[in-house]
Image 1 (cartoon, helix red, strand yellow):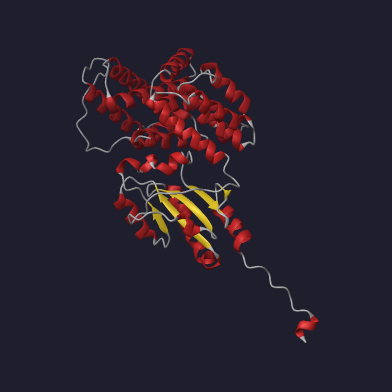
Image 2: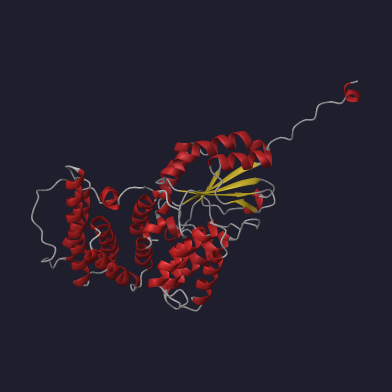
Length: 398
């Protein structure tokens, strides 16, 4: 996954986890991602008239920064937000019309979907809803898994955020709404991404349709020659593997932060927490003191931790290990191409969010995929707490 998509997805998760009107939240999340620059003298810029792709790409960041500076009453902020979002959509369309390439084009496709979704949500206007619907059709037709993923998340936004609004998520309707736009019986990126997005909700609800969805998507795309499809199919296979791994052995291989090879067999006979983390991950940092507490308490009883860093920089990973005084070993790829979200174990297990804390028992079998907080505490108590000592009998006392 590209750095752009990683940063955008952080915003999508922020949107998905807060019960806030999209117009009121998006200006905060989008602005937070805009690159910081030195203040400049304000100049008029008409994106519709510009023929400079680089200037238009820079204007995307300018508009996003302005979203963090909205002032006035709630109504005034909403109106200013809608205006900026319309300007964002015009800028994106201009980049696309000028056949911009590389990162500018990816950003244009991404924020075109984001802006049209936000505008339709803020105004409720039929014309704006139609424009968002057209943007969805366009996004689904693009041969880029990141753009298709953003499109589907926004297309299903009401379902993704349902529980955050105190509503029960209707999985059958969620699937039906996806199928209005996507034929999941056909090979290709849209069906493959839809399965990757929707199936985990069914799996989490113990609905068999989830695994069937993944199996179908994998089979349909088994012979694809499209590199985008091949790469995503590997991740969907990993998601299926992770979704069915409880009670099965976890096989790990790779290099350590010090450059040596992992000896996974050395961990056999211990309860092991396999912790996927990154230095930029706030929840990972928040959880670490608890993991350190559990390590201190249970290490002598057979508990071990294996960290897997998703950082792009070896220096950042080493600095974090030193800062947090982590006493266990950490994995980190030698090859730069295998770092971050491209880590081979991320693909192998279909991991798309961290922290991901996988607990393995003494036999090497996975027993918990989200062993954090109280879950980790209770599992360690169950597996490693010393057996209670029976009181002495009268005969033993004598």
